[in-house]
Image (cartoon, rainbow, N blue to C red):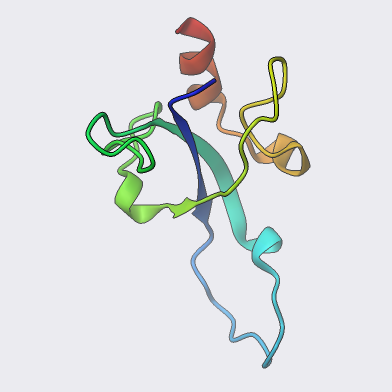
Length: 91
């Protein structure tokens, strides 16, 4: 699954976290996939496979370790974008 960049769509921040508190996982709305930029393969292209502008998303460092591994982080299985997933399966 080379050439796929994993990105997360975060919930809008409505609370101020206490100093040192980190709860990013609770703020993830959806996990998306985007093709890599042909000119800069480490960066995502302009839109995800489901059509969302990648400038509004955060990069997820997850990369599948090998064939058969999911394109999304396993801990975010319920938050994976089904449209991105369908587009990846159609490739």
